[in-house]
Structure formats: structure tokens, C-alpha cells
Image (cartoon, rainbow, N blue to C red; front, top):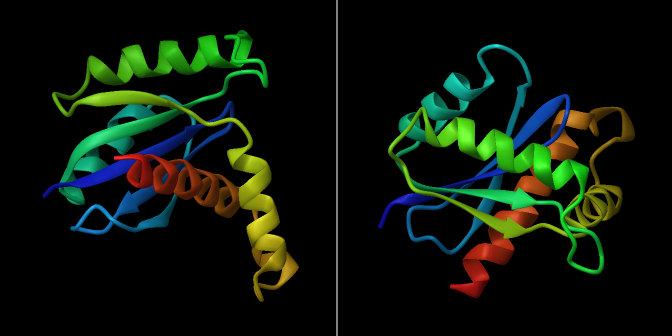
Length: 135
């Protein structure tokens, strides 16, 4: 089974998480800064980690509506699809960042080590674990 790479797309960074080879467990992987090379960086991470699928969190409103940020994510996904043949799917990510912050607050990690990139990677891991659990 191939690994699954998950993305939590934000305006400044893209949080990354990867599944284990069995597709059972998600782990934070880091973050990529948004910029001219972000799509190429993500494709490289996917290929380097043997990802057979990419899952992207789609930030819907609590009522399930698509708003501005979800539109930005859809445009990002469209551009990413133009760079790789790896299948890409979007999944509902409501509350993933809030859950990631809560998990980090509860962890023994020191506050100064909870940088935004770590929160973004943790949010991607929350998205990925929910996806893996639903399969």
C-alpha cells in the first residue's frame, strides 16, 4: 500500500502529514512556505515519501458552505493537479486547526516549540487521520 500525504493549505504555509506504509497512522511531517516553489516542493515531498495519494483539507463553513478560503484551496488543488499525476482528493477539514492547537496545548511540548509550522503540520495530521479512519 502506498502512503498518503495530507495538506493543510493556508495563506502563508502548507502543513504536511504522511501516513505510515500501512495507511493506518498519520504523522506530522512539517510545513512548506507558500511562494513560487511551493507546488514543486510539495510534489517533491510526495515523491520522496512514496505517496500514492494526496489529501487536501477543504475549509468549509460550519454549515458546509464554500467560502473564500475554500475557493483558494480549490484553486491551489487545481494548480497542484497540473504538476503531478498523483491522485488528489479534497476532504472536509472543519475544526482541524482548532483540534491541532488543542492537542499541542495538551502535549508536553514547550510553548516556544509550538510554532505555526508545527500547528499547520499537526492540522494536516488531524485531517489525514480522519481520512484514514474513514476508509
